[in-house]
Length: 335
Ligand code: UT7
Image (cartoon, rainbow, N blue to C red; front, side, top):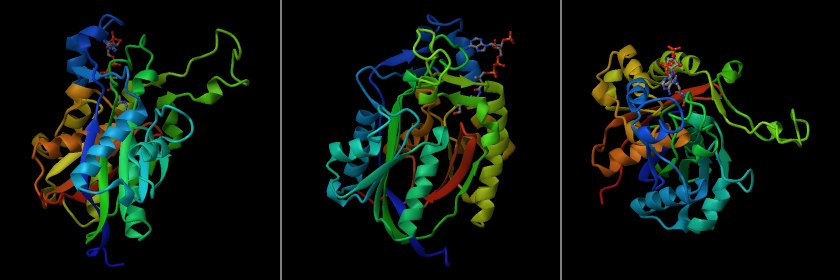
């Protein structure tokens, strides 16, 4: 196939929504033994947004609505809604169907995808595959999380890290260059970052039916995840560049999953690339899992930092273990 000129999904609009309530590090220090200084130095996070009245659905809808508005399209034009989430409000119906209802996207089908913090990247790749195969033309891709519900607020290893929010991109089919992604999973490393689901509360679970039953929380071996991220993310970026016959110098921005500023710094160092090409906003939002990449993309877009023609690498990593990188060209239509 000629990958130079084919049908590809181009981002025509972005959006984001975070909860109103801001929780700073000092507030967390009232819950667990930690400090603002420790959290800032070890993670880069200063504050995060925590859902009170917001839900995964409500934030996904708002982010999707903004992306649609910027793209200048009506809800009826959307063919597919993909929502990446590890923290949906309900097991079913899926978040994408709720979003479809609230947006009035009556012609869209929709489904959710869970690849934890790599979720947005994997959903973006799925959308691109559908578009380049000619199956769908207009796809809304959303990453939305209410991780505060899955956090053990007595565990200082994890509660300092996460935040809630949603981000979205609206992709439309256009003729252009098709970039191949790098995407990986390694289930053998899965125990490093887990959050049990219904099996932990079902009738077969330990202490089932008693007040001793285990509430599913995020559990993490932080060091292992850290080492995995700084080893695998640079490899995935090198791989995606090679696959697409590009070099680091052809890339204007590296938009990484926002988990820890030390991870982003380490990746930039390993790639011998200027840290200025690695924008960060995790200081404001913490790790919002599948929402972090589209929230950052939206912020850069809305602040006029991205220029048409620029090439961007998106790179994600997280539970699974899962990781990968994708390339896109910024071509947002002039307003
Ligand atoms: O989306 C992917 C999700 N996950 C990640 O990306 C997480 C990746 N990992 C990390 O970001 C880091 O491993 C953490 C930020 C979670 C932890 O940082 P670290 O530098 O790996 O700290 P550590 O776990 O090695 O702990 C160092 C020290 C320990 O004390 P001792 O044993 O040296 O006396 C911990 O007990 O810091 C202590 N510590 C804390 N102190 C204050 C651990 N957590 C805290 C805390 N506040 N919150």
